[in-house]
Length: 256
Image 1 (tube, rainbow, N blue to C red):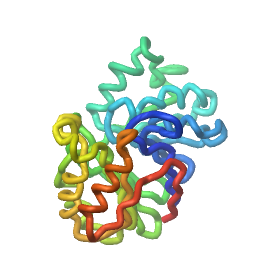
Image 2: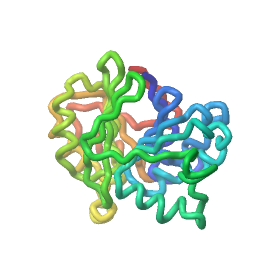
Image 3: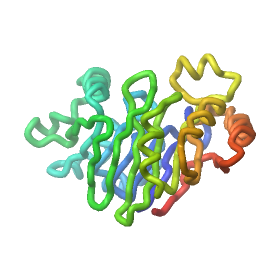
Image 4: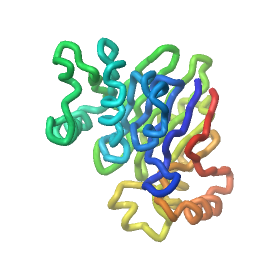
């Protein structure tokens, strides 16, 4: 299984793209602006999107993706896996015939180019030889992270957007084979009030949460706000004495 980081920033700017992870060549976790760097040939292979939640930086490129490969999706639609609340957001605010066409009814309702599969926290979905496990996290709206397991049993986990939470770590503690952990840390510690309001980690809260994990996978930090990356990493390295946190980079490739 291959994991390719298309976008991992908490904002925009030269060289920065918002959250999207490509699993092999057919599955996305979130669909932020990083998807837009893929050539059409690679875009046309995507058939599944697992959403963590409905915030714009995680869903913004779904409409453009579908529109760009529309002909390839006739009779072979993209499936979007998402919680009920996220589906309601997409239908009401995005695919509403005003912001964008409703692709779940095009070319017609019996043969749409996108379909939805509602998931619930802790549900497991198997696609090919890969297992996707949705794990609840604590954000400003219903949200999940994911653990993804390859055919040989190796797995990685992605927190998605979260502040301090419990169940995510409890589930990961049952998987000591976890090789890679991608964890969000959006703000530096001086933004304590803002991070709490926004439902994101800062170094102190992430360090506290990581103390709940009983094993030590490779740790990569994502969703850092532009301009705060160096300070966030500096603070994390001071707090995480028994970890070696690394900043996740756009274009980074992992093999499991």
